[in-house]
Structure formats: C-alpha cells, structure tokens
Amino acid sequence: DFMRNLLDLDGMQKRIGAYAQQQALMDELPRGSGKVLQQVFLRGRISRGEAALLTGKAERTGRRIVKQLLDKKLLRSDSDKGPLKPAFPVEAVGYYFPRLYPEEVEFE
Image (cartoon, rainbow, N blue to C red; front, side, top):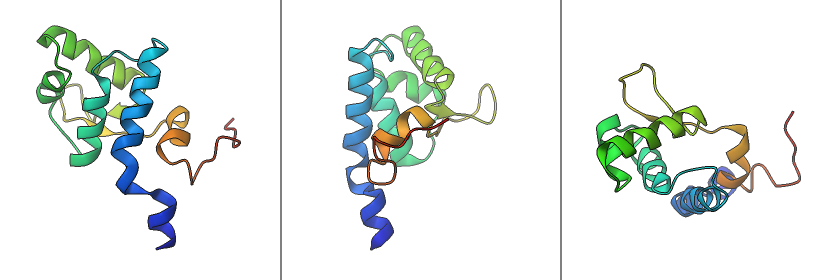
C-alpha cells in the first residue's frame, strides 16, 4: 500500500500526458509526443513504426518525433531499430512521480 500510494501508477497516464503537453507549450517537445509516451509506458514497449503512427502526423514527421523523444531520453531502445521502451530522465521524474520526487528536490 505504501509503495502503491507513493508511485500512484493509476495516475501515471495523466501525468505523462500533462508533462508532454507542458513541454510542447514550451517548445521542448513536439505535439503528438504524449500519446507515444503514454502508450510506451502502458505497454512496456512498442515498435518504432507504431510509435510514429501514434503521433497522428505523417510518417516522416512521426519518425522525427520519435527521434526527439529518444534524444531527450524520454524513450530508450537497445538498438537503432529495436522497440521503444519507457525511460525516466531526471528532468521528468518530478512530474512522473511527484510523491517520490517532490519539486523541492534538486538533482546534480
């Protein structure tokens, strides 16, 4: 119960979407990123082609968005063509896990 409340996984999809939306408003992430991040978290892994389709953009634009998510370390992959997996960069953990990493906590 303690860890379930601390991680609040039931609200994770909402927090991931809110994070992606906030980052898009600040021009840090492209629009369409949230759906990809949410689905990768929900399923554990998805193919790059499917991720590109989830953006709702043209295939080429979708691939660019996936590359940006990999570059920002919001997604990870074991190879250049391998499936995409969730990643939790330091910049996002406070948003993803607010009870575990409150805003006051600074990372070095």
